[in-house]
Amino acid sequence: MKLGILKTDDVRPEWVDEFGEYPDMFATLLRGVDPSLEISTYEVQQGQYPADIDEVDAYLMTGSKSSVYDDKEWIHHLAEFVRSLDKANKKLVGICFGHQMIAHALGGKTEKSDKGWGVARHTAKLTDKAGDYAQSGTPFSILVSHQDQVTEPAKGAEVLAASDFCPVAMCQLGDHMLSFQGHPEFMPAYSQQLLDLRRDIYGEDVYQQGVQSLSQPLDQAMVAGWIIDFLRD
Image 1: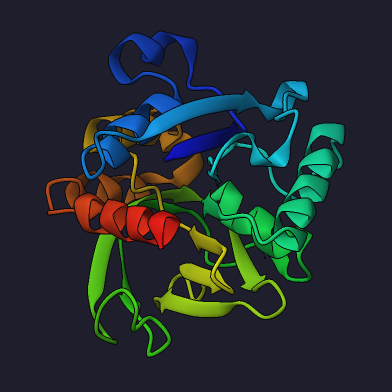
Image 2 (image 1 turned 180 degrees about the vertical axis):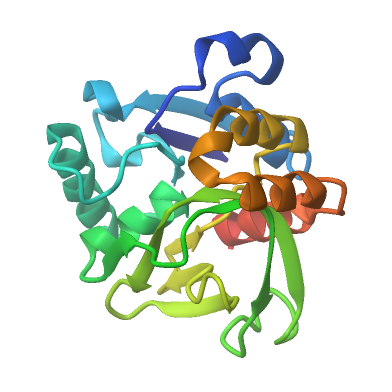
């Protein structure tokens, strides 16, 4: 299977040697489940897209420091591309910004949350719509870094996981679009860097709670398995 990664942001240059760029993080995560996975990267911020939508078997959209409602040409173009993927029933996995873009582009809504920043380890529970993945009520924990949240899913999408802090933590639209608010590709050391970078922005209480959460177990492998199963189904 060949996966096209729609790269919507860059890792800070001083961190790349240790963590790689975002496609590298996804390669490590997903090849842990499927070592044969082929990956191509499209720098959509620079207007780079496949010459043909079927150049790859499926797509994955990364997170970004931008908001999906920002008035930027590359974001408008990306929303159009998501609509073209939907029309073609082409598979797309959205992560954080990608999760929000699917909603934004397809009739839903993303807004800055009045609950503030979500940082570090976050736990959501599967809803009764998530039977293809695990039993209703099953919790899973991954790392997060977001201020925006989906407040209205894409038209026709089902909410597969939720929490009190993030009521739309995982969504699926038909059999071709799956999205997560969290970052299964993040490792605790990378999340720590983000916490340190934005400590003054988060405030000390949020920062300390985030740091303490990083010692708790994560379910990246389980989520990676869900993603690969979805892409291959």
